Structures are given as structure tokens and as C-alpha cells.
Length: 285
Image (tube, rainbow, N blue to C red):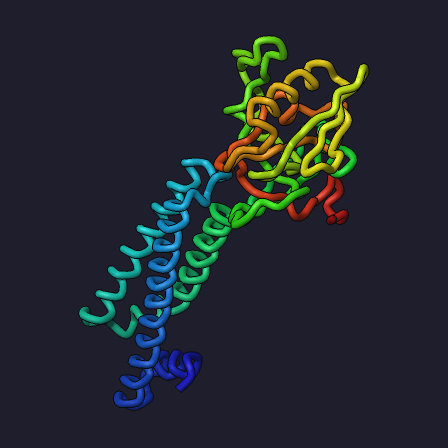
């Protein structure tokens, strides 16, 4: 018996009682299935959330966003269990089932849509706005990018979002961090050096050539950046340390990157940029 047919039978008081009882059972069975689906999805997402958080896979999500997701998942489990108990144990009236069936349909859709979107936003894909010109011509000021957070590996030449809070500029003379307030929480940069890569430089009168695995990566003309890179390379004995990365901006003249603040720790790489939604929404690259 289909649900629409069952609802029609229940709304007609002239139909025999056994048929109405069968229709009533069909509708209640459908409601129970919906509640079970919501409960199972909630349990699975809660387990996955716990695993992802334990493995630091929500680096680009705020504590508030994570708290909202976990609270909603726990609330969903309690609510679905409460209603399941009511339908399995309680004596549900026919009038209640007729009135509430469509409500259950609506609530199930809303709850599943909200928790799935929040889950995806917390652990998989987030959007970010590009500020500044350090990644031109690849990315421009005002571009919106989609950041993939579930980084299983960080590849060479990949564009990534990094946590900027822990990376003040280095003094080019003392090589100590300059105590300044960092205005940007995040930087978008390109990966040019991986852990274990050999890194070297060749110095000329007006510039320094930067090499990774004997490949010329960049020609540095800024004297401060030249000094800092020489110090960093010599300090690590010409090999990028474990869990450290060399990040540079594409616009070498106007980029604050590893030439200014040093190598970046793996835990501070928050995600990789795979899709760019430019200032005009119909331009996707």
C-alpha cells in the first residue's frame, strides 16, 4: 500500500476498520524508517567528526563552527531517539499520524540537509576570499576560492591556504621574529619545497638565485629576502626539515612568504585551493 493511498483511506471514516488499521500501520512504519535514517546518519557523522578532529582535519574551521556541528549532531540523535521511542512504545493516535506525516517529511529533509552541509563545510570544502596581489596573475584581489581541507598529501606547486598567525616577519639582521601584530589570519601561497628536498642558493651582486632539488625556483632581488633565505638555508644545512614547507607567492615583487617568515610547518597548512570563483560568479576556473 502506498503512502498517498494510506492517507486517503485514513481520511475516509466510511472505510472498514481493518483496512484503516493497515493504512495506519503503513504510515507509522514509514515514519519510523525516516527517524531511523536520521539517527543512523547522525551516528555516522558524529563518529566521522570525532575521527577527523582527532586527526586534525578541520584546520580551516573555527572552534565555533565545530561546536555548532557537534551540538547539532548530538541534538539530532536525542530528538530522533525520543520520537522513535514514542512511535515504538507509545499509543499513537490516528489523527496525530495524519497531521504529522508531512511534518516528519519536512523535518527529515531540513535536518539532513543542514547537518550534511555543515559537515562538508567543517571538514571538506570551505570558501575564502583572496585579499591582496601576492598570488597574481593566478589569483586576484577579490577572487573567491574553494579550499579543500581534507589534505592527505601536499604536492609541489600546489596552491594552499596557510595559518598566518604564527608567522611574523624575520629581522634580516638578527634573524629573530619581529614583534608585530599580524593583520591577516590566512595567506594563500604556492608550495615550492617539500620536506627532504635539497635547497640551495647562488649569490650574485644584485640578486640571489634560489634552487630546490637543483632547479631554479626564483630570483630574489630584495636584500632583506636575500639575507633571510641565505640564513634559513644554511641553518637547515641545505635540506628542508621534516614537516616543513617552502611557500612562495606567484607575484614575487609583492608577496610576504617564506622569504619573509621562513619555512611553514605542516600543521599550519590548512587546505589546498582547487577551484577559483572570480569576481564575476559565472567565471569559474
